[in-house]
Image (cartoon, rainbow, N blue to C red; front, side, top):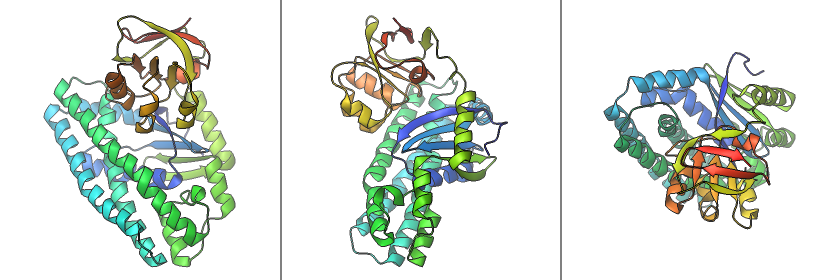
Length: 361
């Protein structure tokens, strides 16, 4: 079951990332990242429930990365960012070729080869893209130019990842669904190795009931580099354990929340809170509200223009919410850790973005 000696820290909450993506991402984080950048995760946890994914990394990895940053200077960080962009630039060309090939009629063997090529390219991209975010959320004394370089790298990588997730992954899902006789929404709940073997045998190697269980709830965990998948009751136990132990989640009666100012208004803003966990939640809103969310993504952008204010659990000054806040001039506080736990739909809140404080009124 989950390792009770690991203290987990939230990284992000998102929707629409099937097991195929998270499994290759996890392999990249714990097996490839250190080789590429000089530092890498030892521990990582994904909990996915009905297409809502939560990611965590360990406190010991956080301390290790802080040590890595303390030993690094601006030149070293910008050199790493440059390497990340080169890795993305090289692999996006390869993935573009793969995407064009998916538009042709393919036999199972050819599709299996394309899938393997895609897996290797996307895993390499996933293994490095988190670095600028980690810099953003840890203590440092880097110059504004270096932090801007981290922000540029995050934005560059994020746009490419969004294109792959919105275009290439669905193209694979459509082809695999037809060849294996599994609905598109479930076929990507196999990892690459399972999908390639299914194509080789010309039948799914994972049952429909198993795929449904994975969709409903699974925990994918790496501790010390060892990767394990848990479903059913064992996944529920890990989920409950993490909810109990994640720092700050017990603070349901907090009077004030504190975070980083991403964009400040001339005076505090007062409004009604709406907790948004998915793009579907955001699309339903009518009127101007204080958006309370784990984090925002590129897909949220056009629906945030009319927000009265934005409050996030996660992120730093170069996260997507901070970029959108500055672009649209929306008072925004990021990295509160517990906003979606403490605040509820309909709460009247005061947002003092100048001081990075949110209060229930």
